[in-house]
Length: 98
Image (cartoon, rainbow, N blue to C red; front, side):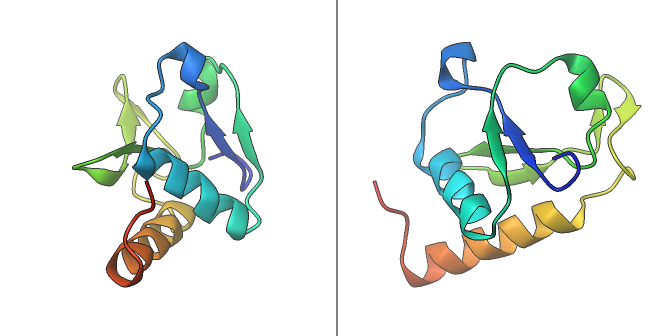
């Protein structure tokens, strides 16, 4: 996350296509968060405002440090918290669509 926009690597760069990732992208778009799928550098990651990982079992995991460098304010940010809240709400009421 940088300036309120979501950045994710494309699947061709090793990002796994999955239900959790796809659902998070849909939640972001529903909340009018501009979403970019592109190759980005470590520097772009280091200067992010917020960062998180997705996975089937882990769901959404905030990241506060990368390579010993603090990301954003060093704690989970409000956008990641909102996406997590929306994700949990969705999984409790509708389940995830395959």
